[in-house]
Structure formats: C-alpha cells, structure tokens
Amino acid sequence: MNALGFEQIVFAATGIVVALLLAIIGLVTASKTVDRLTVELDEWDEIRKGNAAVAIYFAGVLVSVGLMITPSIVGLA
Image (cartoon, rainbow, N blue to C red; front, side, top):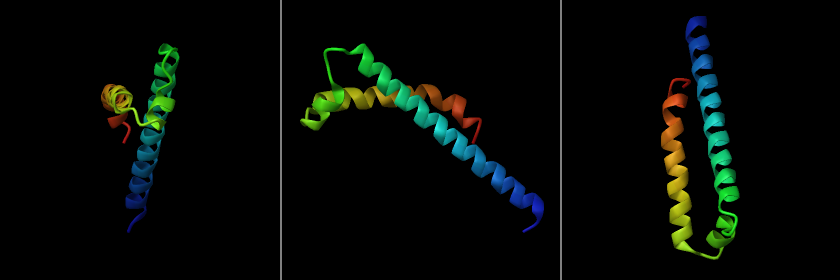
C-alpha cells in the first residue's frame, strides 16, 4: 500500500469518527432538550417501568432528530 492510500484511509476514518461524535452529540442534546421540555414526564423512568408508549414516543423523537441531522453529517464521512 502506498503512502497516498494510507493517507486516504486515515482521512476517511477520521471523517467517520467525527461524524459519529457529532451524531452522538446531536442525539444526546435532543434527548436532554426533550427531557427539559416535558417537565411532568420523566421519560427514562417511564421506560424503565416498561411503558411502551413513552418508549415509542422517545424513539420517534430520536429518529426524527437523526433524520434531520443526517444530511449535515453525511458530508463529513
């Protein structure tokens, strides 16, 4: 493998790591924002209790946020 090929692999791996970190940061931020907006509902406590409706609602929020941030992150990887 020549040096140029190795540099491209390192560049691609770095892009993937950066994109993954940004996606995680975005989803954690969304999770905390939803938690602050729904003061009367503790999503994590309800999910631990087995409340499927809250789990589906929260999964929908995370999927929606993921779909919104995907286009900006795809260009990095």
